[in-house]
Image (cartoon, rainbow, N blue to C red; front, top):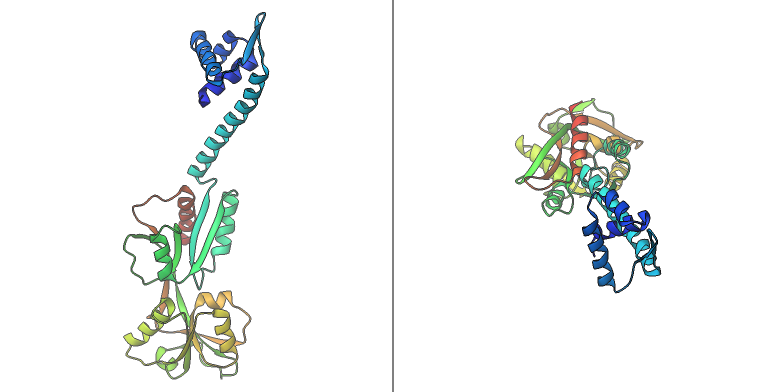
Length: 293
C-alpha cells in the first residue's frame, strides 16, 4: 500500500460509491476498483461490502480508514513543515558568538523571533578562532567573530569596528579622556583573553607595531573576574568598547585609546560554497539590514 491508495480508500469510504469517489479523485472508475481489489488482496480482508447502491465499511475497513486518516494527515503536516523549514519560517538557527559577545545580539534575536516565532536556537560562545573551526566543521552555520583571522573558505559580512579603552581602578588618579599606547606601557596590565588568541593578540600586536614594550603582568579570560581585579586595583587592562557596554556599574576609570592602530573589526561569517539553511539566510539578511543602517 502507498499513500495514494490510502487517499483512494478514504474517498471510497466517504463517498460510499465507486463512481462518486472516482469523480472526487478525478480518475476513471475501473482503475479505482482495481486499487480497492489490490488493497483487499494485500491485507487479506474485505474492506467494504455492497449494500444496495452503496458500500458499507467492514470492521477491517473501519480500522484501515482510521489509520489512513492519520497517515494522510501526517503526510500533509510533514509537507507543510518541510516547506516552512525551507522558507525559514520553521527550523533552527545555529550561531556562534565571540567570548566578548556582540552587544546588539539580544535585540537582534528578539527582532528575528518576531519575524520567525517558530524558529529554535542553538547559541555557542567561544573564542573567534574556535568559532571559525565550528563553522568549517558544520557544527554551527553562522558565527560573529572579531578580526583579524584566517578566513579561507568563509564568507564574511563586516558589521562594525569598535575602539579599545584603557581601564583602571577609581583608586588611580583620573587622566585625560584619551590616552596613548606609549603612556599605557608603564602600567601593569592584565590582558583579556588567552595568549595568541583574539583580543590578546590584537593588543600585543598593536604595541609591537609601535615598537613599544607593555608591562604585562597577567591575563584573564573571565571578564567578570577581570573587571573585579581592575576595580580592586590589582592592575589595569585594555578592553574593547563592548566590554564597557556589557559590564556597567564598576567603579573604574575608562579612557579611549587615541591610536587608530588598536580597533577591533566585528564580522558575521559562514561557510563559503556550501548550503546555508533558509533560516540562516534570513538571519544574514536581517543582520545585513542592521549593519547598513
